[in-house]
Structure formats: C-alpha cells, structure tokens
Length: 169
Image (tube, rainbow, N blue to C red):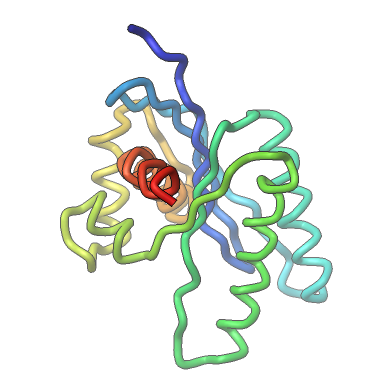
C-alpha cells in the first residue's frame, strides 16, 4: 500500500540566521526538497529582526506547504541575554507553522546529533557530511540549513513513536 509523501519542514532557530530544510518522507525513504536560511540585520532592533524571521518563515510555509514541522529546542548557555533572544527567535519558529495549521514537534540538540551522527556531540561538519549521505541531492547553502535538514530527518525518524505516544495519551 502506497502512502502519499509527508513534507517535513525542519527549522533551526537563530537570531542572526534561522535555517530551514524541507524533506519528503515516503515509508522509510527520504527526499531532499529544499533548504536555506533567513538572515537578519544585527543593526536593527530585536523586534524588527523577529519580524524578518516571521516573514521569511511565513513565505517558506506558504510556498512549500509542509505537513509537519520540527524545531530545535533552545540550547541554554551561560549568557542569559543571548539565551532569551534565542528563545524569542524560537518562539517565532514555533508560531509560524502552528498558525498555518502545521503540527510542530520539538527536538533537543543532542537527540538531533545522536540521530544523524550516532553520538550526542557531533560537530557541525559531521552533521553536514551525514546529511549528504542521508539526502544525496541536498546541497545546504549554510550550516544553519544543514542543521535544519538534520532536524527534519530527526523528526522523520521519531515521528512514528511520537504519534504512538500521543495516541496512548
């Protein structure tokens, strides 16, 4: 029995650059559909930068019509102000697909690394190399885009168990 492909949008939120990656999943086959990043101008206000992220993601969601989305969970670091700003960018990344009616899952950075590289502490170059193996047609233009594809692939691998847990209630 053939099922229609599920389009998954992965989002790697960041205030400077928010990466996005779109894949299709059919059974256990993955296909690369697109990737990129939304850059903000660090000379503008925080509010203006959040609008740039919002509008960029809204265009991507409208153009590509994903069935599901996945966002990387906030990485907390020693700089509270930077963590708070990242959290605000992540809020926009969660809001945009949700407002479009797209279910959104969240994944911890270590789970993404473990899923893609096999260890919870993979370097960005390792993630990018493995994305090339898992999605041979992928040519992400930046580390942010490669990370977003990794988040989408992680969701593809974990979505069935996630749906089972939700159904079990």
